[in-house]
Length: 540
RNA sequence: GCGCCUGUAGCUCAAUGGAUAGAGCAGCGGCCUCCGGAGCCGCGUGUGGAGGUUCGAUUCCUCUCAGGCGCGCCA
Image (cartoon, rainbow, N blue to C red):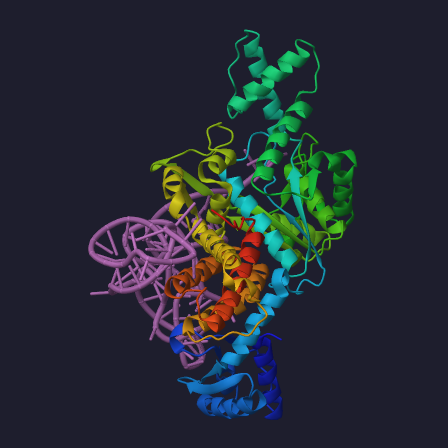
């Protein structure tokens, strides 16, 4: 068992013996300045409930705990307001290190998901143009989160929703047609909001070559397929693979949208006004009602989105996660209202909003509108900055913070980019093991007992020991960025240690221990980077 | 005007209601007989403002100021 779980069990046992109710208390790694290994506020919580001094309670609990866990606990101190600080024996930390190495690739896995099915939908950019940097941020977050959720025991499906019908596609078709006319020498200017990117011309040329002046040809289908194939390739090269591509058009083809409207009608939640059909979303927390069937009898985008979300749950997902750009936040309440109306608890739908990436190039703001056709693509960023670096960069900050991405700076910084710092630690450790094979240390096995005397090594074991909780924390809060921070910190500890102590030396006993330690560091870095979708190179 | 998000060190950002608020970058000064110098070490009077909740607030509540976004029978 890992130390923390063991201590929690011990504390619970002590509270039982003292006939105290077990409150919701914290048991954490103590802040570094304290010097202790773990700290709990259990006495503070109890003290505030019953009218007694927290310090006294802490002292009673400490004494009892010491007796329950003599092998693990070196000593216990009670501090200021009533914290209990626990010092763990070195022997116990050594066992922890062995546990980590034994678990190997599985270290970090948990079962808080208990096999629950989760559907995570992200990117879902309209197939009207290539992916841009913002989508890269979304893809990085979604993919990492999916990996993390899998790691802690959820069954995760990654899905991309393709809006292959509607006004944007109409507009794309129109834009292509105009470019075709240009090719034939006819002049017609692009309407307001048309797609102007060079790829539109490219598609127009291909269509022109294939179909010439034929009256009808599958323009939309061709264009969507074409653009989607670019998107797919971009994502693939970015290391993101979707389990399912769900086409909006299938909802119409299978009449699902009409079924949803009928179902809402049967619940008495649809009424007519100004020639349109309205859904009473305000009854479910939305600020006002919304149109689902326009005056022209066509459903709105919202209507197919209701249908889509309902069917995500119908397909067996207990939890649905969406990752949207923050400019869609006004949409959250109405979509939650709609699934609530259909009998699904709205809290089963988690919507993560990421702030848009503002892109600059040498301090100059780069406009980022797909429709204006002037934007920096994900591919450009990948090629300039590299896949690993850009993914790490996108994952360093919480989704809620705005991200300033200066391309010139990112390029310039690339050698000092934090991702290299973490990867370098991994490569360095691999190098130690290459060196080990060349020399007499060859026969040293990682299962042998070794001696440790420097305090930094125990600090590192403590950090390694935190790893599974970091992963859990990311999963429970849907925030992968805690993992990037953790890995940077771990890499820092390693580089420091490496600089101060030689791993391979004539001191055989110390060598045994240090090899174990760095092997465990390498393991955790590798597991962590893997979850983030970033490679852990053996050489750089 | 209403709603959501964000205000933390020169810059970019961390911190499940916990103890003396932490990193990176930039700047200055040091470290290569030795496993990879893409590295290490040293240098810091910062939570926009005012109240409140409590043993304890960057975190929760109210008000306020600043920025971003949204408020369509667009998606």
